[in-house]
Amino acid sequence: LDLNTHLVREPNATFFVRANGESMIGAGIHDGDLLVVDRSARVSDGKVVIVALNGELTVKRFRKEKGKSWLMPENKKFKPILLSEEDDTHLWGVVTSVIHSL
Image (cartoon, rainbow, N blue to C red):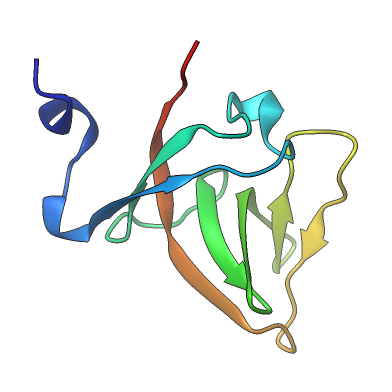
C-alpha cells in the first residue's frame, strides 16, 4: 500500500508538517499529528489551511463572512482571528489529510 497514491494529489506542491497545539482538536487535528498540505489546492470557505500570520504558523479553518476573512479554531478555548490588511499573512496551503498515531 503506497500512502502517496491515497494522500498526495499534487506531488510537486505537497509537503508534510507536524501539528503543534490543541486549537484544531474539533477537526480531528491533535498535537503531534502529521498534516498533508497541498500548496496548489484552492482555498475556499470551510477549508482547513496553514497560514504564516505575522511570522508564526497557524492551522485554522478559513471562513469568509460578510466580506471579512477569518481563521477559526476548532476548540472553544481559542478565539477566532479576523484577518486584516495590516496583518502579514502568507497562505502556505490547504490541509488535505491528517495522519494520527494511536
